[in-house]
Image (cartoon, rainbow over all chains, first blue to last red; front, side, top):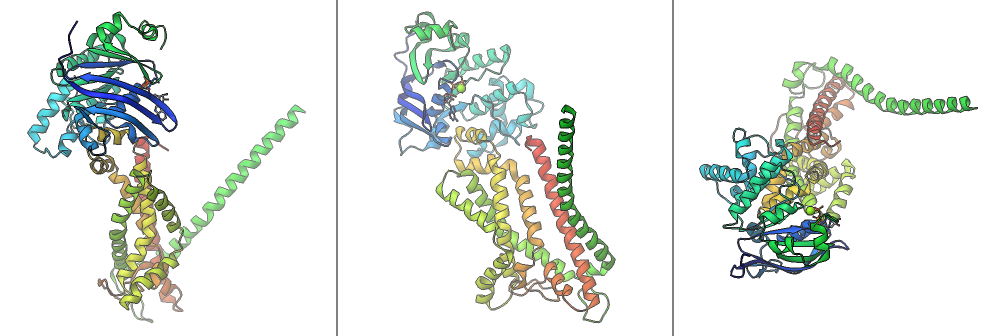
Length: 258
Length: 285
Ligand SMILES: Nc1ncnc2c1ncn2[C@@H]1O[C@H](COP(=O)(O)OP(=O)(O)OP(=O)(O)O)[C@@H](O)[C@H]1O
Ligand SMILES: [Mg+2]
């Protein structure tokens, strides 16, 4: 079993709660994530995985009536602190959303480089290089290299999702949140994205929501099991999948509910 | 018994059809009558001179409304120059900061504003601009027209931007972009042509207004570009000529009405054409 104890803790949730109006979707989650690891979140549909993930980069608060409580520490600093610049937080914690959301009325190329361009980088060669390397990492380059100027929305659902992955990679965030990034992909593209995660693990920390148990077991160092807005169990994936402590985790993993 | 009932139901259906069809026709008939009337009367009085000549003194045949056509163009551009920046910005605020208290109050005010009679807007501009400057002026006319345009531009901009789904904004914010950049370069960027549609609709509405110009831009009989001087406009010129006792002038008024109507109708149709194309693209009805 790998020993992670020496790895630095980069992100920590402390009693994190989230509401939509009166409805509490996340009910007090405390967990830490170590640098350069892949962390999977599994759990039945509607248990609050996406909501939790969206609290980690302060996107949840964009929804009308939504609010959070508790703390999220990024390298020891609470991102919900009033002194913290939310733009800076989101620059350091990237996100790939559950539903592909490329920018309409923007070309494939513009979709990938818009983040950099609006940060003030305008050198065309730099932008093109970044676009190519990110599209390659997202396993999309070969399919789009001849039509970089067509609209991002003209791509298929799975291609759009990979475009969104490339877009998130382009701004180079040390922490990457991925909400079911491969649910719309075929096995080949899925394998490539998993390869990508193993690749970027050298420099980045990944938190990924997935409904694919094999995927979680294959790629992740740690796994959390969510149920009804609670984190029922969290631990090294090798433990969770072979020897779960909680009955409900075992039931879920073995496909008895969910 | 059964048959009777079925006949009865059929009869009700037909009655209803006749009723709705009748109302639809009742709406269309006046529209077509106006168009036909103005066309027959106006086109017969229209000549090339109408576009290239200034008015002739009473009694002389011929002359045109070149000055009024140019005047209307100037006044509308002036009004748009004021109303477009304010209106679009206001629309952005209403759409992007819709949760705010100010937003809710502003929305109500805009609705109220679009209900103000145009003659009242004319009086307002008269009191605010003409009286202090002690002269009728193009500036006063432009301001009056901009107040007509404002609520239309604000409302259409707001609605167009609200159609942009939230997940697009979230995608921009999640890239670590400040909100103003997301609004300008992500949300607004794709909607420029749609915003233009709202602006054209507002302009076409203002171009036909007489009341706000009567005691602001007032009108004159020659070409003038001075902002602090009276400026002619098609609607006011039509009004002046139409109520005159001279046959020749009345014919000119018809010609003016025809030109104004064609101008406004074509602007409207153009705007609507763009709008339907947008809606087709977005799959909304
Ligand atoms: N915008 C919203 N307004 C109100 N309630 C919401 C909203 N979004 C999600 N919820 C509720 O919050 C709960 C958690 O939703 P969430 O999307 O986080 O689930 P999830 O675990 O990601 O599910 P899935 O696996 O289907 O993606 C659900 O009960 C859902 O009904
Ligand atoms: Mg989800």
